[in-house]
Image 1 (spheres, rainbow, N blue to C red):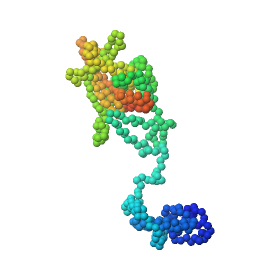
Image 2: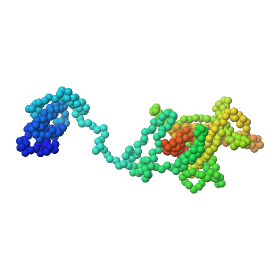
Image 3: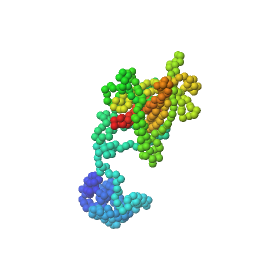
Image 4: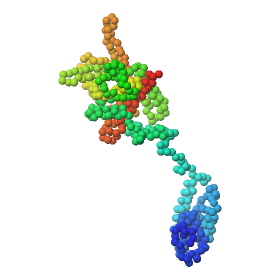
Length: 474
């Protein structure tokens, strides 16, 4: 029994056959070489009949081997083959010369194989150099534990900014709630960072009030956050309830909110946004894909006249008529403001507290403005305002210098008018976006977007409050 039969798993031959073929012929030995170095033949070699068929098959294989060796150019790596391979090749060539093929291969098969050989030749690099890996193979790569996967220098790589379609915001989540930036830590036992309790409370408060607002009144909504100080009515100074971190104060009957801020702090916060604008323009000067400005700026100059209208069988109305001082003749617009609810955020470690207010501002018909102007206003406010709108955070920053005329008598007894100037800062969120997030929560399509908008809005207020607090601590 020969080696080829053993490799093919053939059954042992008969004794007569075994004794008659103790020394296999040369072409039989070449078949063994083919089995060891080339495609294995599945033909059985247990009888002389099958041996003849195998010889024909071997002749074809030998011819193919001869063609392959003649077509390939001599390579440096081929010269370094072992002596055993060279000997086997020589035996193959001798067999081909001594025993020509009894049946020639069809021309189209030979041509097809020659074409494959030529393609293989041209696919190799010039000079016969081995192919270089574009990246290390899997067995040569450095292993990282699961806690460090997808990190660069111990930190997560920054995600590419999502493309924001014109006229809208990306629906991609803003905050990654499942990762920490430290190599050996997970964010929590559940793998998710819990939301901030103060953000969740504000979101729930806004949601509860939004439920009561009809669809037709959504366009009149104003959601604003004012900077100021929560004052204890009894003590007469800033609220002190023995806490050191931000919290929501719910006992509104014992407090009042003074929304004015100091002039120095007002200017510092305004300068902070100006610095951000300047830095943005320097970084993106050569990037045409970015907007030219970080903030959209609008300067306005209005005089607000506040009227309290009390009519029979109707609820009292608070009407605000605004005169545009930049136009001549002046233009008047009026709104009726209805307060829905207030939420007070006490920030004992910061310079200012916050008040979040929900209101509906209904426009007043033009024919009702003139009769109202004939009445005496409750209050007059001359407002010079700079509005900075930041679309990526759906927030508008209103820096307002308010001049209020005060009538008083001088020492001579004459009536004089003096102006008291205060400085105010308020943030407004885009009502369209906040209602869109609200609707996604209600229909179950996205339970995160609404709360993210609230957190972004609150973060903007905190950034400004932190800046002015640093100034005060110097």
